[in-house]
Image (cartoon, rainbow, N blue to C red; front, side, top):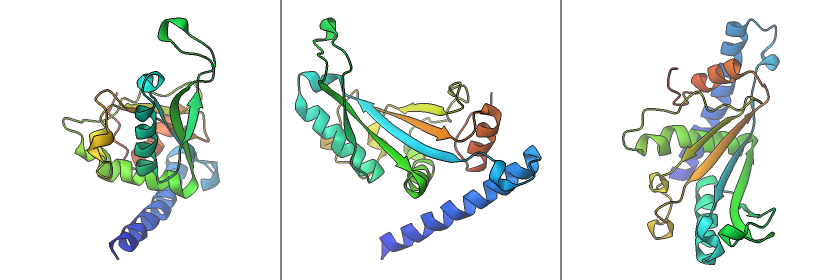
Length: 189
């Protein structure tokens, strides 16, 4: 019963926020139609596991962690080239990633904004300077203990996530306004 109520809340949040953002950005940027505004194409959650070369269990743990967080099974990423100093050979398994689209991306964003990030101690917000030249927003989370669904025995001390939000627009200003409309914790410049 509780899960159905949570799903209902996230479904309503997802559809209401999209309408609110489209209407707000259309007025603010003086577009003629709401379809001209930016939107989220996908969210990529990635984690590299440096210790996976010597200990395969670390990679299995991070795969399970990301699956719990995103509710989608991650794919294993492999090394593209050999690096002798790190005992890394081409084709070795070194991390995992998940690509979330449509409703799953919005559900993950809802959980991140309203459940996970408020649990970070001394968290003030993310820097607005983390946009790449394509207008995508990249940020990292270095504390996996903020996710309540994870078994704490799986978490290693120096493990984190890198998250990329990919937008349909390459305009950084428009994407910042979009993130502010959905209450994403961005610091002021």
